[in-house]
Image (cartoon, rainbow, N blue to C red; front, side, top):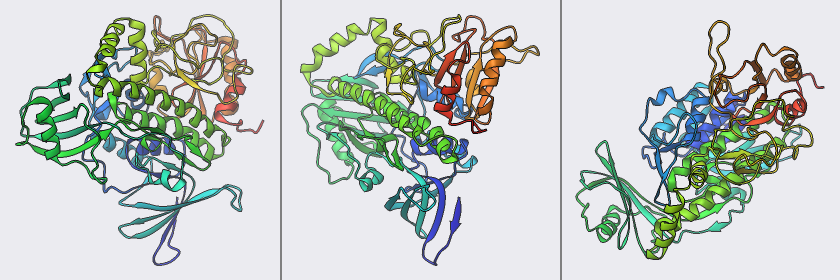
Length: 556
């Protein structure tokens, strides 16, 4: 990044990527961009990380992501509950993996963690800066293109020039408004009132449906979070302001009969069942992630996790493009992959809203769902949606579709089958993504899925290597799972990947017996942990490397 004071009034910055918004999505994106070698400036209106922990759930896939970047140690051992819910109907979230269930981490803690990592990696964070305007130039004199943003901060205006801008500025995104990006969907028709309150004593209520509405209460560390919806009550018009505590206490009393007006509110808000998604996550040099790209009721704790996972998918791709090692078309796979995931999540949230906020007429549907969840395939499918563990990107090789979440953590069969993800195995940069099972439709069972957390067999000196830890550099990974030293096959794989050695790390060693990794196979893993190619021999490997990591360093 460069700084220039062209006149006494305006500071001018030049950077690779400007991120607008320093919530969990924006901060995760900044860490990934820096890890990938891109310069990044983050601007945010707030003076610091949020002081209101409105989101408090990290799901299994987000926990795996944080682990793959070495961030979990700082969190200690947060409380974990294997139970979640789908529209208030209890749901066992347990699936194979190191972090089953849902983990209770205050949003304040998540933001502090990500902000510290982003700063340690060299991200430049400008707090108390409001975005005023932006201009996109796709044809600058040097052919690179740029985005220019005007912001105002405590010390005056700042003009920021970047090659790309990413809007991570929440559901009321200024970037989205300035770009005039189409944001189809529906406005809120119903809402939940929510408050964190001290000085009250009420029984915990887990999605308790009463005669007049829905009541939820949970107390932790002396603070009680209450949420309430009154059946048939429309969304209140407040002129853009949050509800006051009296509104919450009045509705709570009508629904539960309890008086909590003696409590002290720490914060109060309302969230409705609006359901909208950008038509596209990429608008040339402007991209979107997190709530700026999709607005939804945060049912099941999915909103924060969806945004963090958006950023994790985008960061390495955008860094590769601005470094010049990958073509700009790689960014289209972000839109393809994450837009589809977002659409699926918004659909499941719409279903959950009906189950949660519907009146007595919805009870037969709730009873039926309760019965269906005793079928393990149904339970696994919904748990895969909520946790993020069921995601399978289309990387070529017949990987995309819909169905159940993977029962076996994506383990592949041993053997000497053909390569997947190579030439002729799918669209060049992937055409879709789904949540599905290994249904025998073709392609390696791990293709497009996250790399299982597993151990390789100890080396000769007793060293043990864990797949998740191998991802911590943020580089690609070519994992040869051959035994007996690999011989000629390992040498051929290593030679095929050598021109990409500046971007992809080669690791060889057999998997531990009984684990989820396929012995005798090789796996090409993207920096976000998803398998992009699989096979016993290097057939199709150079094409997969080019597709996801750009042209080889020697220009061949």
